[in-house]
Length: 554
Image (cartoon, rainbow, N blue to C red; front, side, top):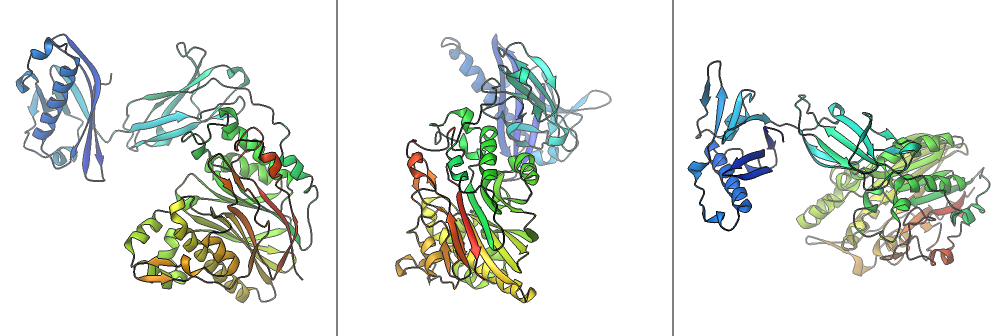
């Protein structure tokens, strides 16, 4: 065990975390454990040393037999102090000093003595708190970190090493590159990754390791999937005033292994490495002009979907949901048909407060602190593309993902109002800029709202029922808009299908005055109902893709 005591400053609460790797023998009682203590940074050294003595006495007492517990341990039995080495000897540091005085100094010559063991003291060394690999590893895919969390870590200075083993006892070193491209000869082996962390100041922290849950597998063959029946409706690409739109929540890997929600799906088919290949095959077969995806993993986008869709002639844009989640919204359009004029993400919790076009609403709802606290916690977002067509049209393509929590129906309604208000604002700006162009809106996404919800009423009927008025402080909000929208795919029986929920919550909205629906690609609900839920080997997400052929009116 390392003979270094680590002090780490925690800005929240101005606390100090002290980690001590105790290895000692007290009257034939062996102690080999790591002790972690938190204290205020303005505490005295004396209070910290007393706390350490207490933890040591507790460890010794827990290791004692019943007869040994009659032996009392007093503070004088435990010698512990801080000292600073000098050219000749050392000086004991006064215990009435606060910890903040010590931590502000260079600790290179500071030592802590516990019994007869001398420990180096290091400030703000890196510490890895969580590290793990993907739950499922396939040959010829990348093995990478699934979780990597800690403090004072500079990821790019860390030293990694990969190993493999058949029995988790004898390990063979592979490489020091992260991620690791798994080879065919790794099938049947467990993989281990070790990490020696370093901080920005190149301070070394304690090394950690993580071992794969299962051995490396061969990638399974993708079977014939039900979406191939849907592909029979989308064999040809569209042209002229007609275009095909896909909206699809693809299920982020952040949520697949979080709890037992998807326990009905075998791990190998729940893995993002399996599902992303199936999703891509499904998307390509739709021959779509516009694709709006929700819950796309950032890594899967950068390393897989972006290059793969570029090869198919698409330009893609991605934003983290809420600007902080490692999954988000991705929109793709065919380069041959559209010129991308601009793109942006609107995070509703930030836009309400900071965007002038929402100032009137903000003045009202900001009086309700409870409402604003809930609103500020939301990551709901919109990715907006502005496209120029060859047919003298500008299309605003909005891709939206709203909160799934049942108790937030009022927030979803407010989010829909913000979406429509912003789209109207952008449409007016573009009409001033492009005098000879028609400006049209396509609104896609996972609204997490059923057809009879207040959010859907607002979108479909331009307003809400009196019983759905939102109460914010002493105000009652009746929300309205003038856009005439209709759901291009209607209101299918299912767009999401799990044991916990089966229903319609995903939509593609078009302007009724300016566009017609030429074709809705069937969902084949009868096949879906043969399963307990999706995803599974044949369905790569817990949602279904919405696919519609739309044409603009002349």
